[in-house]
Image (cartoon, rainbow, N blue to C red; front, side):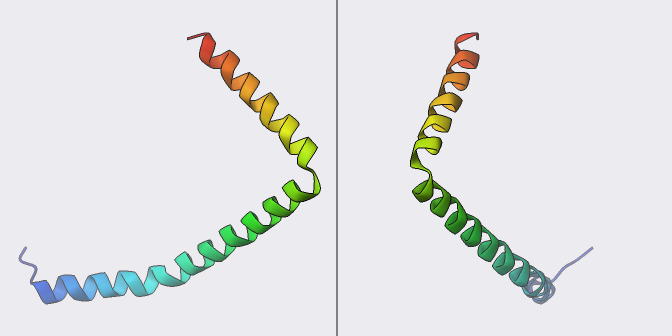
Length: 66
């Protein structure tokens, strides 16, 4: 099975054309989620701080058992 460089280049271009729209949509979704999370943290800093402390405590307890 011989594959020449032109065939590889064509296949790579085809993959790029298929994946670019999906990557752009994923990027937009992540940016939207980041904006919403940042807004929640700004609106509820105490809740987020307590949540972070609780998660850290739980992870510390799990890690200390090993």
